[in-house]
Length: 54
Image 1 (cartoon, rainbow, N blue to C red):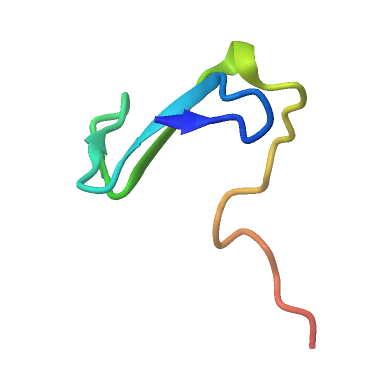
Image 2: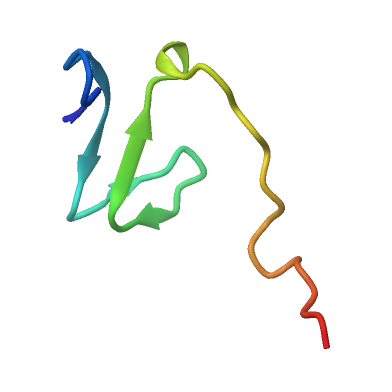
């Protein structure tokens, strides 16, 4: 269980052994955050899409 350090509200859960994603892929470790508990969301670029600067 992932808890808020300030108020101890449940923010989500985790599983070190992994869980199956909705896409079918197995993710290890697995972390789930409840959307209704998030104040701000930012979209990150996919892994490997960033170019290295010389």
